[in-house]
Image (cartoon, rainbow, N blue to C red; front, side, top):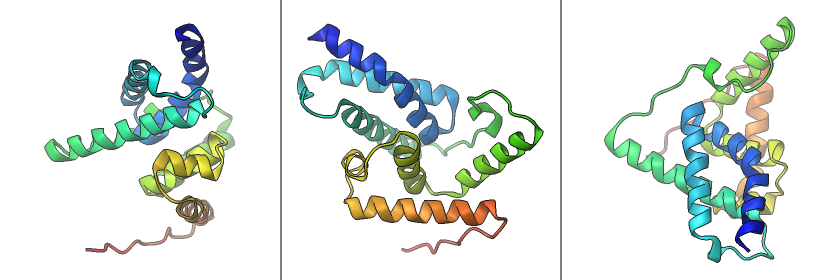
Length: 170
């Protein structure tokens, strides 16, 4: 059982790394998050049901670890923004492609964390809405709403329109 579980964990590492990178926006923090997620999954191997979706289970673990880390960090320090060049995990495209990638990365930064998480899970990881809802512990309708708002914000930002201003609710 442990060998089969180990193989399944290894298969999911690229997905975990990509999702961690989108959450943290930092290479080193994302590596730490993946390591913590794998460690937690391994130590709780007996809790995973073999007939369930391992990737959704791992993403749930990672999301919970990320949220817990954010909570503890906000209680003690402020969050540091990283240089966008550190997050690049691709070969450098040509000049026009590089400008498009820069614009896309800047547009992704306009999204709030909730929208970016949903966008990455659905569009990059290819997860179904129900799986994303399970990972984030929100209703499926909320996933659909966040995804719609994320896509609209990206479209407007990439067209050069002003991204929508969010009201702060007290």
